[in-house]
Amino acid sequence: MRAILLTSLTLALGFTSQRLCAEDKAAEAAAAPAKTPDNFATSPDQHGLGFGPIIMGTEGLAIYYDYNLHGMNKQLHLQLDAGHEVRRNLLGDPIVKLTQTNISITARHVFTRGWYLGAGLGRYNTTLQVSQDAEGSKPAQELEFYKMGALGLVEAGWQGNDFYYFHIGVRPALIIYYTEVYNVNRVYDVSNHRATTEELWEDGQNYSSLILGFGWYLEP
Image (cartoon, rainbow, N blue to C red; front, side, top):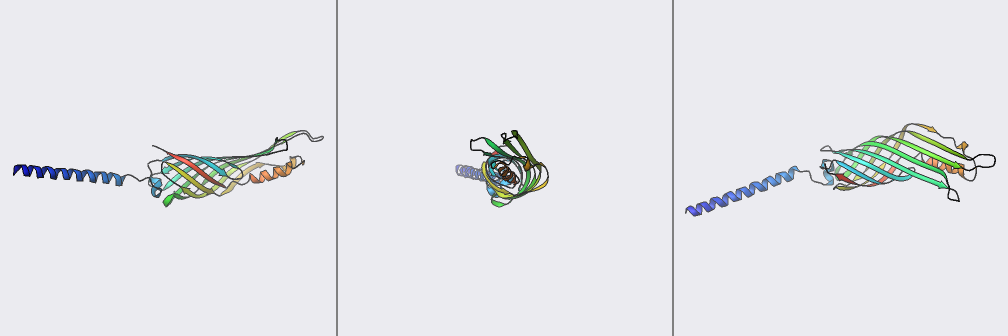
């Protein structure tokens, strides 16, 4: 009889221990944030780095850093954009070069499944360089025009989340203030140099953008 009682007591204690272990594991699993797009801002991976092609006035490359605010469905996004376009003559020599650079910071609210809306500020710089050979009595010349200032940005897009992530977004931009130096009449009106200068300068006034990016979350 004593052996039976000891056996029963041992089995009961073993069952109770297994049950407590299972409950502890379940509690830990419930407390840990799941890596799903539904709660991406609560992911333990706070920091993300990424890059991807961008289309603005020019085509170029964007590099960005994301900082997730835990438990708030909020994200800070820092982005650097750089684009470049060159027009050449028939001999392949560059005639007009357009360069765009933008740096911006935005605050985002993240909804379910990774969709987000955001707004922020940016600083931009557009440079246009014109190279012309001597023309008749006119000497060869190198001209540089520029425009720089501040932008207001809004953005919308989607961002997946699972260690690495994809990002696609559109960013309409509005110029807040600017300074510029531009006088197309200084360009010799030969061949299509002046018309090309005007065309690229117009392209450089577009600061809204479309981006497709790929990034990685960095372990804390």
